[in-house]
Length: 157
Image (cartoon, rainbow, N blue to C red; front, side, top):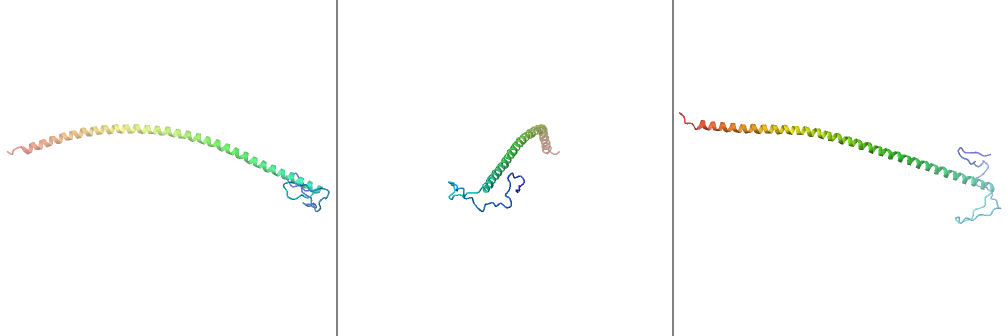
């Protein structure tokens, strides 16, 4: 009787089966692997099936891990694409807003320059009138000074 884990295509070992057989079949000769310094013992038929199943399960797990990694990488690529598109959209919007701000600033500068020019013109006109009044005051002062000198120089009668 075999039990199966959910999502696992390979059956588990039955309750009476051990992971490692207690007796090895003596018919098979040990195989030599150049990567192993010692020879492997020969395995029985049931053990060979178990290890074949285990290899199959390991390959399945490796494939699942590779699929998960592929999905993660695909998701990251999608995220990168979305972020790049967002960045380009944001840069375009910021650029448009900066241009609008620049236009408003130039309009404001023009308006204020016009006001400044008008005030400077008014100031210039006021300064001309002040100079005229100053010149008239000098003439009045000179006239008063001359009149005072005339009054002071007259002999008393």
